[in-house]
Length: 141
Image (cartoon, rainbow, N blue to C red; front, side, top):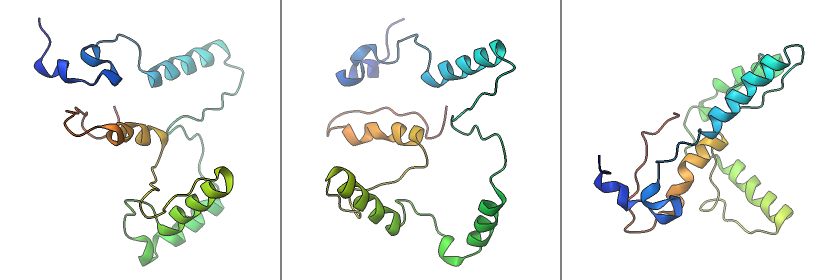
């Protein structure tokens, strides 16, 4: 069976016409397999899992109390699609102080809710005019 037409359109930077043909295991699946193996081999040891969505206990009562108060404030009702101004300004100050990098908080700072989210949208920052990107349905696999 021949490749679909769009297979030849993938940018060389992501593998060209070989993109998506790899049989390599997805990195997050590798991590899950390693976790299962470690738990099976060392059942008497506590595993500290810092993975995505792997919380193992309730947030502290003090955190839950503050969140309950904050959720009822009208100013917290909206969705900050590009982060709140105070956060963006703090990021710009941090980058200047720590790395000597000047950033405009309004146009050069964005937030994300996790590294997987950031990595999934990062390619869009490098797509050139005329490139034909193919992206999965937004969301986690």
